[in-house]
Image 1: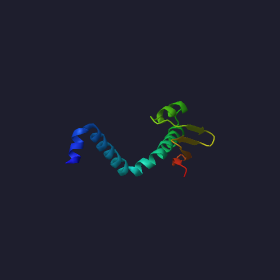
Image 2 (image 1 turned 45 degrees about the vertical axis):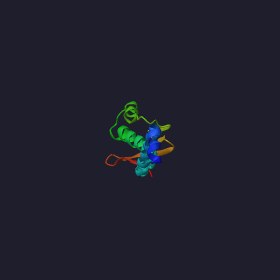
Image 3 (image 1 turned 180 degrees about the horizontal axis):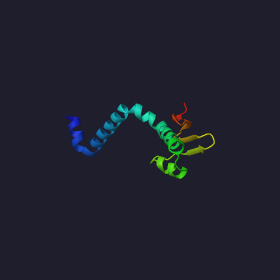
Image 4 (image 1 turned 135 degrees about the vertical axis):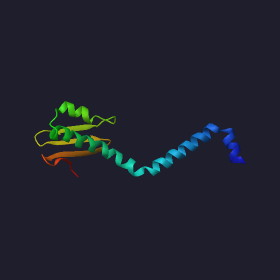
Amino acid sequence: MKSASLVRRHPIISLLALLLLALFAWVWHERVALRAFPQIISAYTAKEYCSCRYVMHNAADYCLGYVKQSVPTSRFVDDPNQRRVSAEGLGRSSTAVWVGEREGCRLEP
């Protein structure tokens, strides 16, 4: 009976505690995907920009707009001579390099 009276006396605190518990359960369930998220930002930016620029032969300004995301990248380097693109976001960096006409661009390990 004490727990029922606690809920009746403090309904907002009880609701917030329940929502916090639900949030924790969701984070635990999605922990693998959430851990991979920071790497996805830089990898997507590098690979898509490389493909846009060197496979589709679009202008650099167009490709920068094409890969723009709501989560910004902290560093972006396009090396047209080597056809190599590096991007860094959320503390992770990725590099994509143009392999050839038939292969396109590939992320470096």
